[in-house]
Length: 93
Image (tube, rainbow, N blue to C red; front, side):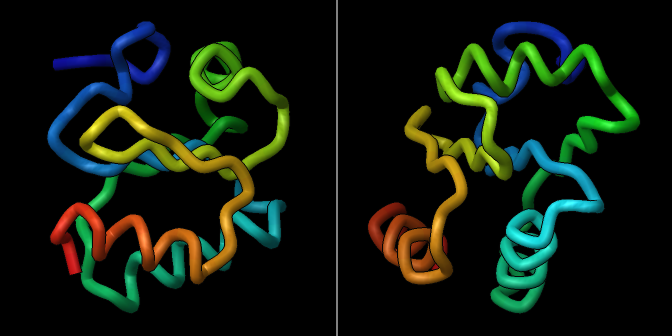
């Protein structure tokens, strides 16, 4: 099993979202994924502080959420439209 603190933590066949409960954009993106019925792995950066570096290594930025897709692309602070477009591109929705 891959731990969120390892470099390949987000290289799975599912979506991985790095975020925090205090982050409004994170809550919005989680609600969108839940509403669309999309399975994903949520990495709470407050509960797993070592994962902060993993998210930063993936995105090159400190903003959240970082959403990593099965094709190894990612979004940082994506809009709902960006997330939905990517999910459609990948055939997930």
